[in-house]
Length: 424
Image (cartoon, rainbow, N blue to C red; front, side, top):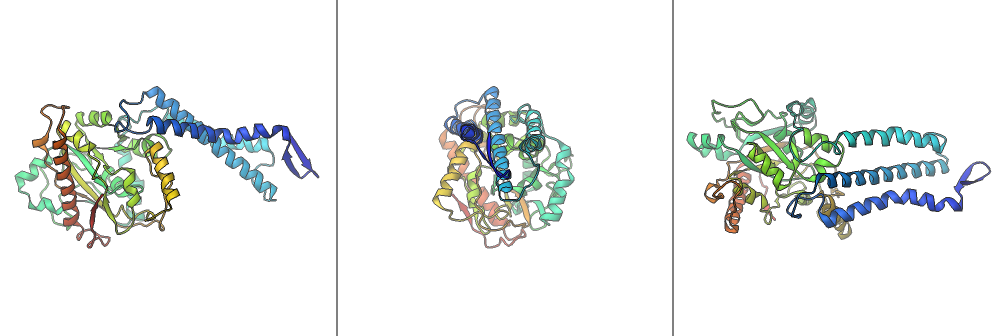
């Protein structure tokens, strides 16, 4: 199949070129087909885009096609890269193509196939059955909190100091839909302080350090020293929680599940509290030090859901998440177009366009006073609500986030005193 010169440099014979090119580009073509199908049918997006939930069997077939394409593409890159290095006189790895293929099969294909079969292709990301208390107490999160970011905290907003004991007790014994900002490229502060014990969980301590009395009937679970019945879960973009290694394990074991309305509704009706990032991946575009964007002016589905399920909304803001991985303020239009395309396919903002080196600022998750929506609730659980009610609930939510931000920015570490709250 190869023509060799002087026994040293070998080139593929003409008759083998179509087969070789098919092997190289077939995987890329498979990925492109999967991307086009996903974009057209919103296979990796929620019910905001689709009228029905994607059937499980179709989801598994789609993921299998994506994995085959990814494996084949990575294999082609490694294979061709090794050949180029050998041709340049820098041989790395096995001396024969057969040995190199066996090595790739052993170190790449076999582990990935095993992971996929034991993970996304067998376990559901549509519920929170993968949640593990042990995972939320893992040493890794504490190490990340103490050794990498130095200072991560979860505190109460200063607004809680202005409530009476009766008002505090009222809010401490309810369940919520939680609205979180900013998303950042990856909201590590919200994950570390919100979904794990690394910061100790919510207690009766405000951003300024004021101490408030904790409820006498507090519970043993995360954040239950303040919110007595709190059982926090997180609704996550489908592409993040159900497709890629590391993210799949992290979100699944920390209580993450697909951010699709029926799945969120089911968790709420189980008596759990669900955190949602209304800004989604698009909010990550604005992630840069000194910019604080609440990308929610047109995102109101979470408000409608809260009203239909007769829940109030708990606003939360993580100071510092905006600065961890700075994004370029004004990337080239071609790059922005590529990001838009990938987001339409996966729901994720990729590729990231870094505007600076990663930073490790102090991270402070602040829990505001819940937004009272009871007068706007549906008359029955799951009932319909008017657009006017949604608009009013959304207005209250934005004002609550603005109030939380302005009342606490001077008290949290990281130099946010002159920060300006933006709504987009």
